[in-house]
Amino acid sequence: MKKTKTILLLTQAYAAELETVQNYLANSVWLDGLGAQEVSESLAEDVVEELGHAQKLAHRLKQLGACPPGSLELDRKQKSLQPPIESTDVLSVVRGVLDAENEAIACYRQIIEACAGNDHVTQDLAIKLQADEEEHRCLFEGFLKSLKKETEDDANSRNWNIESSRC
Image (cartoon, rainbow, N blue to C red):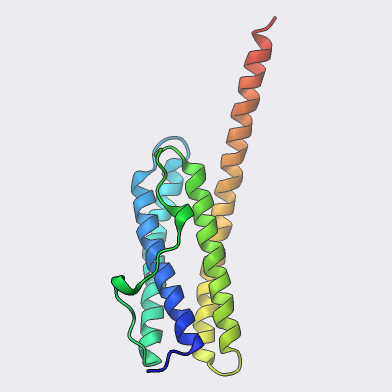
């Protein structure tokens, strides 16, 4: 079967969704410490949703006459979403999630554009999946703001303690 641009883009999205499942699972188990529980729970819930995305993409590939690739055929690219060395590095995981969500959104935008006017079913699927990814991104942007604020508050508290001890 001839690999069309749509099939290539769907295959990339499928690979990215499966990689995201793997990384979300690993990070949801690995994280510890302050702020980790809410992020871990969110990642664990998102594993199911991201797997659902991969299943929808696999079904669409089959409908278009393409075999969904197995693990040996899939590229891995999510360097920033690898579990951190320190299990308390929640901030790096949140940043990695945001990178992955932004990549997914960009990929779905490409699919939407490639299908415009010629494959409304695939385009509709990409629109729905993009909306899900934008919702995930919004949630993790909130986590990022909270973690940055905690970091700033901790730094201000340490500075205040240093200043007050100089009396």
